[in-house]
Image (tube, rainbow, N blue to C red; front, side, top):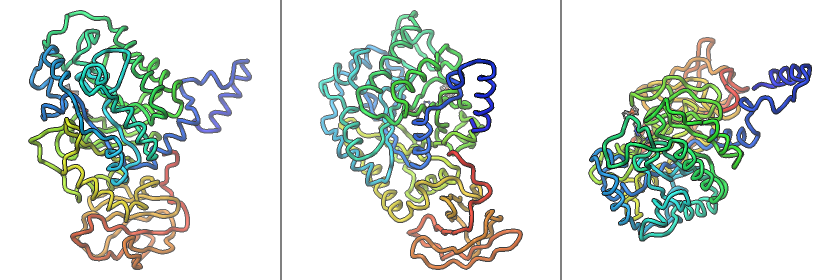
Length: 446
Ligand code: H79
């Protein structure tokens, strides 16, 4: 809400004799959350981790559904989960080398198995497996020590819990009773969220998924979101429901697509004008560990996603699927290390930026911080790059790598940059354009 509207609302309420601040419960967003949203928009790069009982079968996180595994058989599979080589400090060290600012990890996926110690069900890693440890606790401690924020992925869809009833679009006959108590299921979720938000220190937020399984069920989101915001006023609600953002939500996230694109077929084309944005992306074609999926994106392609996400004002949440023993395959670690090396040189054109004055194009994208515009040239064959007007006079322009001056021609109809030659080791030629004032198209707030 802008200040003028706030003042008018307060004045109206006062005139009517009402309480000024409290009455705006739905609209008002706590200062901690607004600050967390700005932090999130600055962060630009996160690491997504899909890890659970399913990792053991090496066929992705939907294997229970895809192979129509019965609840009783999956429960046995869960008793064998023992990731003895799990090392939270090593995972966080990898995340740090990659240059991510936050980690989002599966606390409970659609298989319904809790990857943390919970009092809400015995079906959890500490009570059901020989591992006995709480990996999320170890990860939270390592993240806090490293200054990386930790978000918990949390599935609202559940293929195991008997009270997930009536069942949703992904249901199959897996041995559950044909009855259940939905309000008990909601209470179970709220109890687990309470644990996640009270036992693991500061949490970046909760990343919800699976609501699309029962889009019209009485989810009572206001209650759940209110609980989260009450327990940790700085925690963000990030819903992957593929719909327009609702009250209480803080980030609009897009799965396997840049904001507004819908190549995946289930994203909305609506893009929020004031919430921070995020794109989640698999590094190969799978979220959970998939032992035969070798369709890994190249480093050049991944840099392109990071740059195009930033040019759209979005973060990139890049996924890895660790192995069931707790190790991370070299295809993932090599790419994360390369992205970290890239960010060590080019990070100033990514971190802390907002979308630039020229919206993303086939050739690349622009970002900006203050009066500085970063022109990211990903794919352009010619020595000259014509741009529309940047909305402010140009003071100087130079190549980010090496600082060579870039000749610029500025006319009433646009700007032309003389580019440095492309080279095979440089996926993104970044031109730093220093202007004399904030570009007109700068949108504040995200
Ligand atoms: O956790 C990862 C995936 O397991 C999960 N989200 C990411 C982050 C995910 N599950 N499904 N999908 C992503 C794809 C969603 C497909 C959908 Fe549908 C299309 C949901 C609704 C329409 C599949 C087909 C489920 C119902 C019909």
